[in-house]
Length: 116
Image (cartoon, rainbow, N blue to C red; front, top):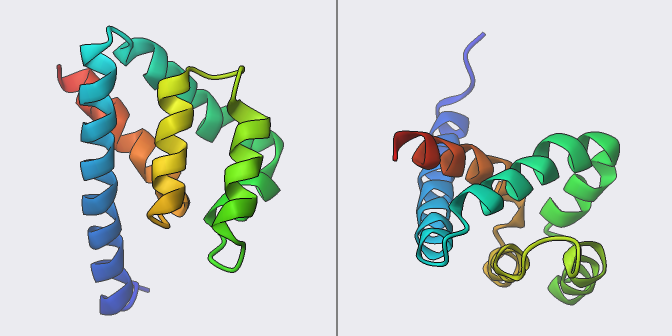
């Protein structure tokens, strides 16, 4: 069974938005000579951390949870454990209500990195 048209359109829009964020992160990381490091850390979050703690991914993506609570969680979980550029990027996603796209951003970032 095929997904409804509105779900397909939403997925395309989400992928497009995720690609924009991924490109911005990739460009910033490249300028700092950290493209590989940021890619590795981003991949570790979505592949390893989210697998170990699926509730973290749900928490970050939940629209019903206040941004301030997510901001505090990002600081506690990632500051000092991940590069500051990535932590700051997570805050940008949070401020724009896009943390639920982190998995898609990671996929788009990996594709950018592989292409360059």
